[in-house]
Length: 343
Image 1 (cartoon, rainbow, N blue to C red):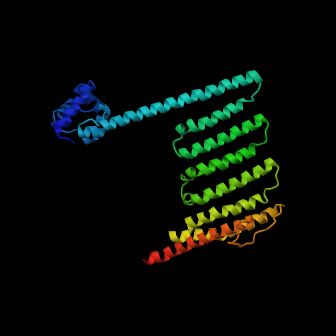
Image 2: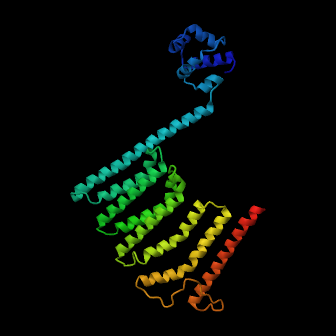
Image 3: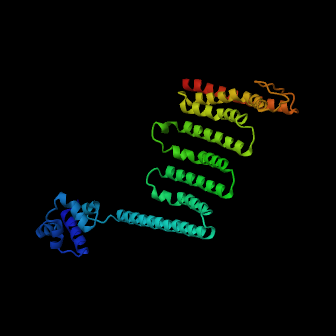
């Protein structure tokens, strides 16, 4: 606390600012008028158990009372917080009125014009989609990002379903799978960041696993919608082979108990293992799906660096040179790991 006279003068100033007499102030604190007089004249301090009650009566914080001065920054922060909460309430009620009023008007109009609910479901699901981005974040207190993205995804799927049913189409499964895959690719990392342990320690694997499943679902929906016969053969094994690249890198970088240079060498080595298989696997998948390949690739490169005019040879040459670059980079990583540690 400040010295007694400063402390007493502060209490006196606050009391008079509220228009209270010493007796009225004492009655509110259940103490004698003489005790209040001694405080204000700087003869004594109030009992420490009375501090909270004094602050409540005078409308000041404990910090202001103990320092006998106004905490302007704290009061400004409290004022801004109150204004912010009031603004949130106004925004929330404004959205209630706008969304609810629009839905009610459209409901009445749809019933009056069509004698049933037809396009009203488009309006309702459209409003739900908008509310998931504007109203839901205001209402949610915890896991705001996850809940908002989940609400937006669900409402968008409902909007697509309503549009598909209203138009009499059969494209909902394809659109739904595409939306889930696209939103997952962008926003899934945000959701995974909020996962508790032990799941939170495997975010990369969960992200790749979820996106792999969603991509397979998208391929299935695309094949079913177009009536094509490329799913599951050759689309599914070809997709899984392509995903072997990022899956290998992720597992090595995240879980391999080795240093970063060894991890770099392992990732380059994994790429070097898969790269010679790209063309032969693609050829076999085409043949597996009923197609024909004039010159199938072998399971190792057959380059001819003196011949760059033929498309088949050109492809082999390029991939072989790329493989040599990967092998050289992997070797440099190994050398750095070995000799860097010794140095």
